[in-house]
Image 1 (tube, rainbow over the protein chains, first blue to last red):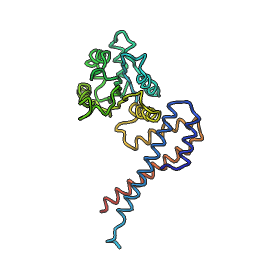
Image 2 (cartoon, helix red, strand yellow):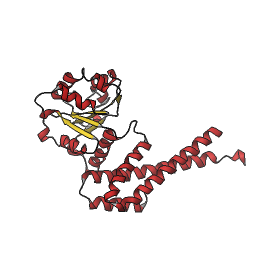
Image 3 (cartoon, each protein chain N blue to C red):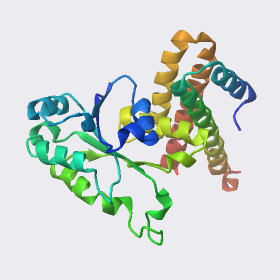
Image 4 (cartoon, helix red, strand yellow):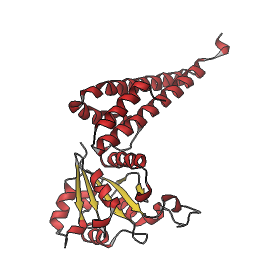
Length: 57
Length: 218
């Protein structure tokens, strides 16, 4: 899930333009933000998991 | 900026929506579209001059009976031998269209043959000149594509045309950042998107570095 303000800004910009390349770019951009957020979530989880080491307690 | 030359052929180009879609999608900086079917004959010097001036070559065509259309084959037969010193070490990609669904071109599909097998001669042509072969792009059944699918294809194709190889996620982020940067010049209200994109990108890099250093310390 991308942040609501990002989605709103992209949707508004896409509705405003008649340029096909720009609409395609904006749609791709939304997908990129989604992929970034997925990677951040999974890498943060991986880091937390690897740092959690009970033998060090 | 990568200089890309698209060599395109479509025997029925006046009536082909997919061909028009390919051509419109390629109208971006750094890309030259050279359409073969409007030429009566090939002038070797002119064709070679185009090849000399490009870093990346894209052959774009519809599959015709599991092969390239006749005009594309004629172009290959006319110029490929002479083009060796101009193409050696450069990048090449294939952008093909087909009226049959792409999923049929695989083991167990109705066509019983894969795109990799169909394009074997073109792959060998490229390998002969030590060219870097880019990921294949296929536009199948254009008539049935939704608007979302069409827009996604435009971006995928434009990335094939202009994004640096090997198309890593970081290069993808940079590609979007570059385009967004240009768009912000006329639409400054989109600037927060670029800031966020760069922040996310840095965070991903930091996390990668943290994971790498953790891996080394174990």
